[in-house]
Amino acid sequence: MTQPKPRLDDKSGGGRAIALIDGNSFYCSCERTFDPKLAGLPVIVLSNNDGCAIARTAEAKALGIKMGDPYFKIRDLCRAQGVRVFSSNYTLYGDMSARTNAVYRGFASAIEIYSIDESFLDLTDVRPDRRVELARDLRATVRAWTGIPTCVGIGPTKTLAKLANHIAKSIAPLDGVCDLTDPDAYAHWLGRIHVGEVWGIGRASLAKLEAMGVDTVADLRDLDPRPVRKAMTVVGERIIHELRGVSCLPLGLMPAQRKGCAVTRSFGSRVEDRASLAQAVSAHATRLGEKLRREGLGTDHVTVFFHTSEHDRDHPQRSVSTVVTLPEASNDSLVLIKAALHGIAKTWRPQGDPPWRYSKAGVITVDLVPLVASQRALIGQLDREQGAALMAALDACNARFGRGAVVPARVGLERTRTGWSTKFEMRTPRYTTQIGELPVAIA
DNA sequence: TCTGGGGTCCTAGGACCC
DNA sequence: TCTGGGGTCCTAGGACCC
Image (cartoon, rainbow, N blue to C red; front, side):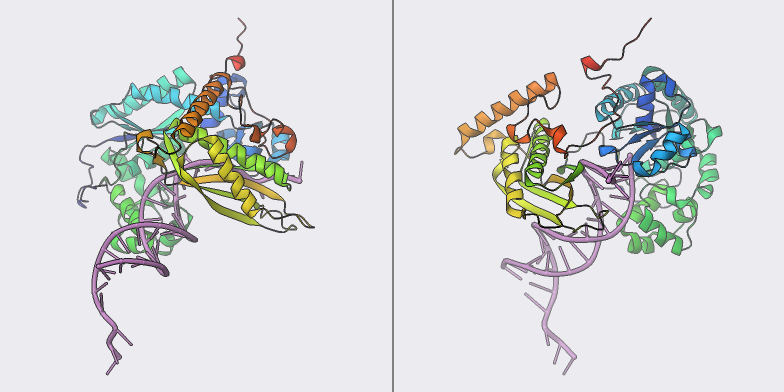
């Protein structure tokens, strides 16, 4: 990656303008889109396995519910305060995300989809005095077409756009838009925002910066980059340049090829028997195969892991992680399942008394490679072709009838009874992607 | 006392993000 | 009873090589 040479005297940003738009309490807003009665009520969405709160509306935040709060600790509060609680419905959120991005594309020459609820828009060709107006129009359009409320931050660099977005979200009179390409706004806000809000400053860096006497974003911007690089690596130095308006993080218009892929889940309840563990990792390996096939990638090493929970203080702890090498790179679910089961076979230990109570398992790959048939050995070609045809048929069935309609026998049909499968006890319908779950309107 | 001097590659672990 | 999942990037240090 070539980076522009930082010019430290350049505080204007040279005319570049990047917007960061994100959905407010995105998952909660998706739920609200399909149930207008949720408007004005506290709403939270839980992580996988109904474990923790990962999205909260303003009303829920006002009740003191924190990001990552375990649900079992706030359940009574939620009942008492009438908080509406949902399991996560990633199928719905993914589809709503695609809809918001379709709207964004109508407003900007180029966009980078950064996460499920955030995108960067290139507004460089929008006149400086028209940017806020455009942002307001964008917000209104997204709201009208998808139901999702958003905030927009604009800045000469990505880091400043992120910061502007934070300001837009937290300062009510700004009405959801903040433009730090405006020199007055830039001069006004940086000295008033805590340095911990800067993108890329986490707990560890914050502690170091506070020890250096840094309090506001402006304090960090005005630091000598060299000692900061010593303490926080090149990442810290880059942040300083970005805060000065010198771009170090280019817009990534093309989605990069992923480097690794993982499928990991906590069990719905603790697992002590080998059969359940084998079934769980088989299901994870199946899902891994689906993800890899969708992107034309393969792998020749699979890491299989399982472990007990550190929260089970009164029980023995065990953590296992083992790498299984495949004969050649593959994305065939049956090959991946075989590898995962081999990983279990290598590492399983008979239970004693007290037993190990396993809480989570998964399969992980790194070093993904594009899977191109012509580059592969002729030996085994027939097996591979048959395997590929089988996987294509399986993917087609699952695309048509819903994921899990057809699964390898090893994954089993009794998943809900065996206790390992993930809990989603409060999940809403997949309104936009399953014909049988369409919302019903009565006129 | 002095003990060669670079390179590259890989891995583990830290930090951070949503 | 009950505590998420999936990524990226960076660095230090060891192995190995000539």
